[in-house]
Image (cartoon, rainbow, N blue to C red):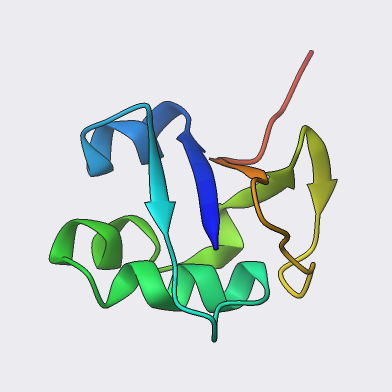
Length: 85
């Protein structure tokens, strides 16, 4: 399955890129699966996704929870919690 990944704020800084397109294994079905898959690919991803309580996710611009199911061609965004004033 091919996915577009978009990284924001300190996550982008840790990974070293704003976005990328990846081809994931068939076993990757959810956000949690995707993060676990990314962690195995390099220390950079492992470091960026060490504490998922500090990371929020979106699929196709909609906020989702970690067990949200992915589909071919989805855009997945990773960003820190947003606060406002």
